[in-house]
Amino acid sequence: MQHDKILILDFGSQYTQLIGRRVRELNTYSEIVPFNKIPEDIDSYKAVILSGSPNSVRGEDVLHPDLSEIRGKKPLLGVCYGAQYLAHFSGGEVAPSNTREYGRANLSYIANSNQLFKGISEGSQVWMSHSDTIKDLPDNAVLLASTNDVKNAAYKIEGEETYAIQFHPEVYHSTDGRTLLENFLVKVAGVKQDWTPNAFVEETVDSLKNQLGNDKVVLGLSGGVDSSVAAMLLHKAIGENLYCIFVNNGLLRKNEFTDVLKQYEGMGLNVKGVDASARFLDALAGKSDPEEKRKTIGRVFIEVFDDEAHLIEDVKWLAQGTIYPDVIESVSATGGPSATIKSHHNVGGLPDFMKLKIVEPLKMLFKDEVRRVGASMGMDKNLLGRHPFPGPGLAIRILGDLTAEKVRILQEVDAIFINGLRDWNLYDKVWQAGAILLPVNSVGVMGDERTYEKCVALRAVESTDGMTADWVNLPYEFLQKVSNDIINKVKGVNRVVYDISSKPPATIEWE
Image 1 (tube, rainbow, N blue to C red):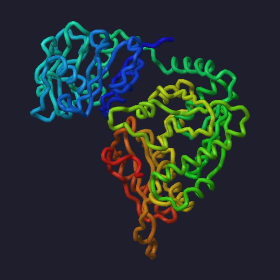
Image 2 (image 1 turned 120 degrees about the vertical axis):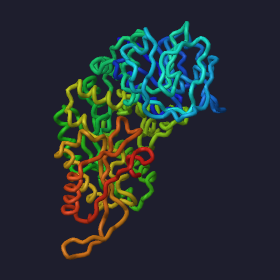
Image 3 (image 1 turned 180 degrees about the horizontal axis):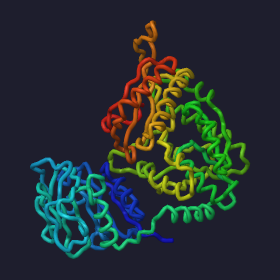
């Protein structure tokens, strides 16, 4: 089945992926490409959206794509920088704003009989984020909407289906942002809303059958959402020809190796568990630099995985749970906030000695779509609802060097924290949570004795995609109970702190 496609040109905004996800949530397929890599097959796209950007259209570093095959030929929506770009290069004037246009605003004027704002009323809240403003519209533009501080909040170029808005409809703070995007996609561009999880499963399984035939495929399972959903799609397509390997690197959560293996047994997957804990810990001995730890774990994992893959006769494919944000980041050309991939993502990082072809069934899906696809296949909601867990595991939550004793301490602390979140019905309200073992000892008193033991930090964040995150305001009573349990039950810990830093400026992980 051929789906209508929306092209999103990325100018480096932190919100670009959010535009893509919002379009997908409207059951419409979107693709994100750098502004300077417009696809040659532009006719295959039904409409185009220009993202925001940290750059200015007035600066020397103006991001200047060739829109000659798009303007007037395809429905076009410019968002923030996109709106200023269209105004600036169509005869309008963009100038520095007298007031800082950032945060919530309300629409004070909406033009009548306006398709883009159909169903949106004056007073609707929108989210601004720009230091420039459109002072004068181009001569062939008509005003569509204003706020009290921003006269030219939205406009349309006459004679073409080109629309522009100086606010961000993709963020939650824009109350009717979803309606506006749907108006553009459906009412203006005439897009069919048929991109659904069920359709994805059906089409992907058919595609995998054609691609793989009777070939054998090996997949490294992590126990996480992405690799598990990838495994189920492949299992539906090729059954017993899928060989799954679940490696215990000794840095998993408490009992995770045995618990996850049991869970996979219930899913009918062909899974082999490999306990390589000692091999990983030996390789990590004495290493305290975060990047060195990451690279060591990646190298040893590939060695272990390669040893196991060689035991399978005639395997031809390696399956990976790569998802769309990883792909977008690996081709970013804008120097935006998502331009750098963490080394442990390993996108395209297969060593030459593993002569296997790559299959990536999830590479066009965002994280929330992966979960919806898994749900449509009837997968366990507890598995699909699992918090993200870093590839290097507890290694980057133990600051400094690693020892088996430090891993034991952190596994015990982490288990008390995570189980506590579940017991208090807080787990599903948190995007990611974990404990960090700090490289400091602190003085304490236990019984009548003075102690000098480890300090641990607890971290829980709310997020939609991990690019930005806020710390979670967990109940004091909960934190008090968890802190008491950790100090009383985990030998070697006498102090617990709670991390209340947001991202940015702090990252979610400490290393």
